[in-house]
Amino acid sequence: MNLFSFTAHFGSEEACRNHYKQERDKVGVICAKCGGIHHYWIKSRWSYECKSCRHRTSLRSGTIMQSSNLSFMIWYKAMFLMSATKKGFSSKEIQKQLALKRYEPVWAMIHKLRKSMGKRDARYTLEGMIEFDEGYFTVESSEVEKSKGTRGRGAAGKTNVAIMAESTPLEDIETGEKSSHCRYFKAKVLTSHESTEINKLITNSLDEECIVFSDKSTSYVDISELVELHIMEKSDKETTTETLRWVHITISNAKRNLLGNYHKIKRKYLQQYLDEFVYKLNRRYFGDKIFDRLVVANITGL
Image (cartoon, rainbow, N blue to C red; front, top):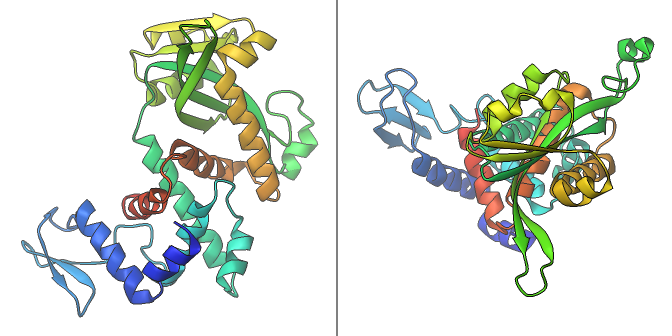
């Protein structure tokens, strides 16, 4: 959706609110008191009333906009900016574009949207052939981390991130040239490099009938027990450019994206920035529809 189209459809608070109601009606409303799914709409109150217990649910209630004092139009403009480009905007830049005086409400809004993106993608597991590897991401170090002076994994200013790519090998029948096509991705910040955390990640993120390709890290020794087949290859140039090609392209692109758009990402917020990157990456062919999907994520992401 371009700027002119957005302005034409969502040029007023009422237009944004009406669209939000239409999308929420499609998702459905569940009564917080009795669990009922059938409601009346009270337009004068902009609320739903449960047909069973008469409990009222506001249009914002149960969504990530709950308790927010920012207008629907501000939320819609923020979602448009976040979905308009694959590179993304910092909260400071969005505050500037929205001409808002206070930074804190904008920061909270953007992080809620990033969380909703992560929750949306967490509903799905990867299947088929999976590339799996890890990369170091630069983060802002705390004073405690700096004083420890740790090197390698867990070093100050570095955080380990697991990247998973749903990859399909392709071969040209005429030339025999081999390549691969990639569909969906996942990224997860790791708190340690222990096999127990890797195993939990594999169980939660991948279909048990998939085939996993990775290097020969000792932390991956149990993966074969969790999936149909686990193929481990020695980490070298060929593995990086062929077997784990899409994972390393994604790691490189994610680092470039985060470093180019955000200033000093704190370790505890890195997952949310990755959630935004992966959410848009997984929907790279959606075109204008990515804005509509973000509105749905807003409604269901609490």
